[in-house]
Each structure stands twice: as C-alpha cells, then as structure tokens.
Image (cartoon, rainbow, N blue to C red; front, side, top):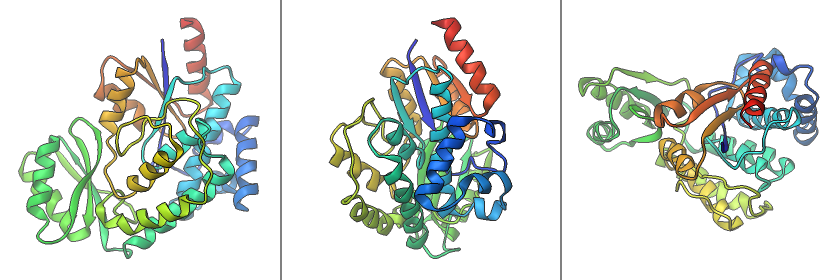
Length: 312
C-alpha cells in the first residue's frame, strides 16, 4: 500500500468548513501561525465569514493553503502515514510544496497572497470568465474553443477528469464556447462564479510578476516527490520548481495526467487532504485502480487513520 496525498485549490472553500476541527490542537496551532504571519485571523473568517470576504481571491488563496496544511498536520498527529508522493490542484500545489519542505509556511502564505493579487490584477474585473464543460472529450472542447474565439482568447485550462474540462478566457468568448460545446454534445456547460480566468494565457502578466517575486523566496529540494501541474513532472531543482510555479499561473492544470502519474509511481491510495471532496471523486473517475478518499473533517480523518492501521 502506497499513499499519495493531494491538496485542493480555490473553489472548495465555504463558511464553517473546518468546524469539526475547532478543538483540534494541530489545526488551531496552524491557523495561529498563519495569523501571526499574515496579521489576519483566518480562523475567524472560516468560522464566521462573511462568504463575500471568504471568496475574495486574496483571502481564499492563503486560506485554502493553511486549511490544507492544517488538516495534514492533524492527519500526521493522529498517526496518519507520511505520503510517498504529493500534488495539489492549482493553488493546492503550493500546499503540497509546504508539506514537502520546499517552501516554509512563513514564505508560502505571503507568496500565495501575492499570487492572488497578481492574477486578479492581470485581467480587469468582468473581462474574463471560466466555465465547466461536462460530458465532452478534451479534443471536442479544444475545437469548440478554437471555433468560438473570434479574435479573442478562450482555452481549455483545467483537465480535471474524463469529460470534465474547464475553459477560460475573455467572457464573451467563454460564453460562445460554452454554447457551442452544448451543440457538440456536452451534457452541461456551466459558467463558474470566479473573479478571473485562472490558468488562461490572459494571465501571462501575472506569471511574469510571480516569476520576479519568486527570485527572493527561498526554495529547498523536496523531501518527497511533488508532481507539478504544468509539466506533470517531479522536479528536485529549486529553480526549476520556481519556474514551473510561475508558468502554472497561465497554463493548464493537467490533473488527469497528475493522478495517472501517481498511479504509475506506485500509489495505491490517493487522499484529498483539506476541505472538500472533489479531488477524491475525480481520482476514482481518472483511474479505477486507485482508492480515492477524503480527509475533509474530523470524522473522515479518524476513519482514514483507522483504515490504514488495519491494512498495515
């Protein structure tokens, strides 16, 4: 049995999402550390909202990083195994890098806040959009984007699971591509409530700013393999890790391939560590041979620890 852990990104947040961990010392200690670093009480924001502030990109990104990391600390303190390999979906890649010892929490939280602001600044509010296309294969989604662009930008940016692709770009082009995808056989095309076209090439200015910011951040070689989103590769050179992170901002998240890579590396169980259960569900759809499970609250954490003890 070989454990992989994956960390969710933006979109899995909700008010009260960590309430079952309210009495968990490792979780509360992690949030206290984050409050000291950012001079902001993220636990209060999680517990009480308001949702509008919780969903503001500059809050959501550091919040989801500390949430995933805090749950990981709770998992380890409860006796959960150290993973053999890790990855994270979009923003979650930063959480994975903290867990792997590449970036300190003290550096990672300001880094993702900067990333959030850079992504938001790259495209004026209301100019960009994203949509989820369900029930259409990757090539058909790409074809719909190419046909709908009409001198604007719309691209496939998240390959999340078989027949589940997210597109992003100029709002009008995304709307055209979503409508066109339906005519090509998509079961659904859903506009997403986001404030920027994440991972689209429109975010190249954000990637350039991120690259400059990363120059002054200390990165270490990973203590465990981290599969990155942009190249689906495990990289050990700190400078190459920085380069991949910068490019990730304006390039697709290749999540299907990330999970397949973990399977080829020998992973048998893939645990989603942090709020939400979306990645766990995707794992089972991507590779039926992998056991996908969620460590999303105190109950699922206890169950996962018990399951692994019995299997050991």
